[in-house]
Length: 194
Image 1 (cartoon, helix red, strand yellow):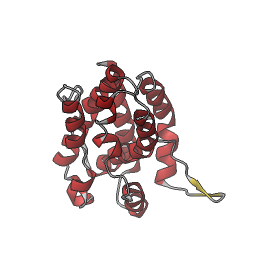
Image 2 (cartoon, rainbow, N blue to C red; image 1 turned 45 degrees about the vertical axis):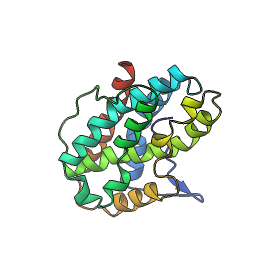
Image 3 (cartoon, rainbow, N blue to C red; image 1 turned 135 degrees about the horizontal axis):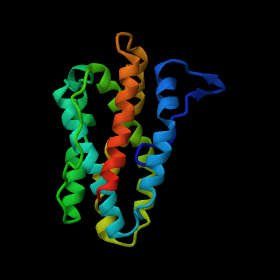
Image 4 (tube, one colour; image 1 turned 180 degrees about the vertical axis):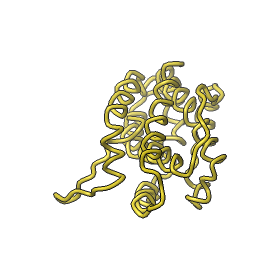
């Protein structure tokens, strides 16, 4: 759900080996657990959708702040197009809540930036499906708060992230994986706290 549709590392019957595949395999259990946890929020009703956004913001805000501190813009010069903190804050304001960090995030290395971005950029894949659910809401307040879920629509942010990831030769793959696992854990903890 939040973290996106399962990352499929096959394309027309051939495997794409390497870091992407290792990330997918190493985070698949955490991904499933987070999807199950976030599925408990009914996105078609005001209270459920607001809680979903609060949980998402609880992890997104500190993760994006840590990315900025780690110099994400040096690795991803298009960072201003990728950041979603402002979008989720707008949605929560529309729903009469402030966006707040609810978890702590450790400082990141450049390899950690890649792992965290894997989770955040992958979540855009699932956001497309969630947006359809939100659109089915009879509550206009819910339907009017979609800046976060629709952020980046029409841009090739996931594909450009994958190109960067696949072209990365100097990263510590174990650190990338640990950071991705930590990002999933941050979202799980934030969801527990709403």
